[in-house]
Image (cartoon, rainbow, N blue to C red; front, side):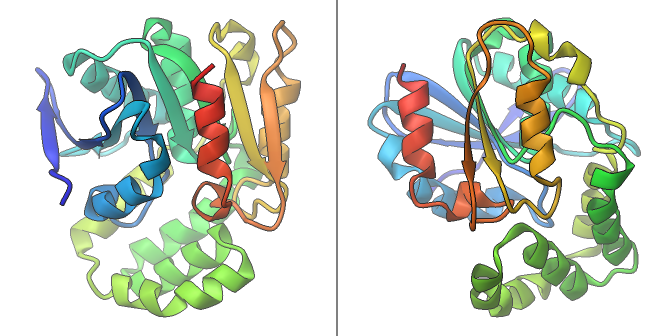
Length: 266
């Protein structure tokens, strides 16, 4: 069973877990979720088992005791501080969805922390159109409709066949959601609104891999394509697009971890 730990800085505490025995360091920043990924630590470790001989892997939550408003830039600042507090440097950084936005900010503001950067179903900006689906989720959370939220969330991030299979477990998970979970979700979801680093992508100095989804129903495939096209400086961002695996291709595509490993081991 994976042990959940807490890193404590001068201003906040943040939960994380680690697994693997490799000499290289990898950091995973998960996407927005209704309940903390810390509750699924064993499942995450199992999913990334193929990387554990080469990497020691750290998975970070968002900070404890969220402020009333909490932007992506602030999430990145706190996550970078937690990474530094643990003495990590020159990491292979993978961010999924909202985690990818946080990872972008870290690569821009703290380049010494990042050796290579992989972005899964992420975007460089969240305008009104891309925020529309997120705002629907916020509506369910504000109405304290955890079942509605879980089903709307699952239907959007997973392809139809996966959603049908997961539907019973999503409803079961929703039964365990607390009002504190819903309030935290709203704060984190609202933090994506207005995020935009499009005009700074040329400032990223490390190699970048963009893993997009052609059928991304959250941000749209245009978000990943815009990431690639907005980089006009050499070298361009490497990329691969999945089709048929949905926004959560990082969970559903069978070769996803292999692509990450090949990129990070270079």
